[in-house]
Length: 148
Image (tube, rainbow, N blue to C red; front, side, top):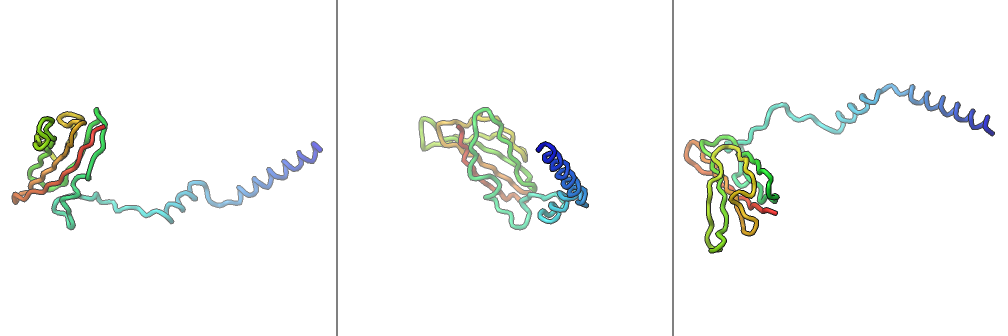
């Protein structure tokens, strides 16, 4: 019985080696062929996100809302083409719920802001981005800031 099992092992090993050696493609070639067939390479040029881009919509400068935890840094980038940039935090007043306090928190194209800062976790917070172009036209977008 041991001889039969040993003979079967040798035969199966030989068949397995023959099957593997009959493959003309290496592992990397198979992967490359798969990638070329199912995935297309993107254009090599960098995409420019600008207020002057065709189809630019000012309401897409920010997401509708950002759900964030205390202690994280909110990092956002405004579109190109602005002469000036203004990031404003709008926070409901704790004592007078009909009043909102506005605080400028950035004046560059990019915003890197450590939370909570002026934002609070017990009231409605908004972030307003205002981009002004060289002709003086303002583009504004607003996002809710939700702090956990």
